[in-house]
Image (cartoon, rainbow, N blue to C red; front, side):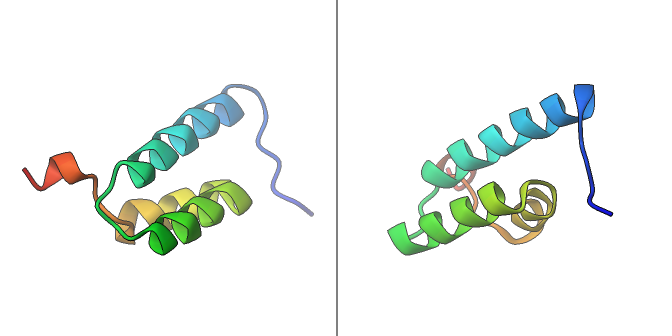
Length: 64
């Protein structure tokens, strides 16, 4: 009973995950934190994205 995301939902999730990873890399967080957040988003795409959206590091442009 796995959660299977296909079609347009899978494409949207892929785009959101790529956006999250780019935002993580551009954030002012430490390198270790960036690696951990990126792994979380890659290993658990949907749940990792939601957790990152709520508690993840913010981009450096958001602080300006």
